[in-house]
Image (cartoon, rainbow, N blue to C red; front, side, top):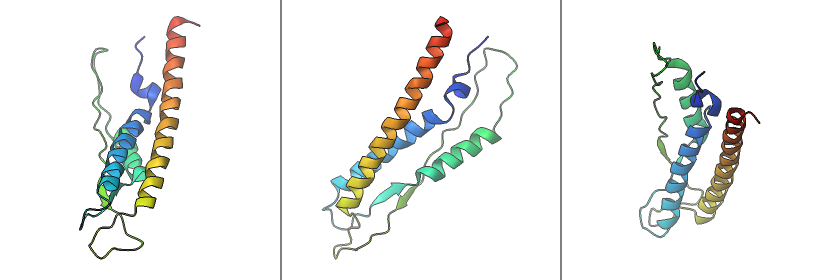
Length: 131
């Protein structure tokens, strides 16, 4: 019996990818906090997961052999512009405090998703070993 990692791991693998990408975007915002005219960006994590879930639900690929692999279309999060609470004179929309809070929250969420995914993998390994 073949193990379907896609079914076992669910959407959590994609969630980690989106959280990694979001961390890059937020770090870029923080790095450009003093760049005139820089506009802060972000990814709507919930929208990306909804998109990934709808793609996962709608694209069923029929496989005719056990060796066939399912095709997955990665969900890409569109970069959105953050609305500034206090726009600066030079046009920079980065609020450093907001970016640091969002980055920290994203890091915690990443860690939680990673722990969940890790526990799933440990469960699969235990099942394979028959423990």
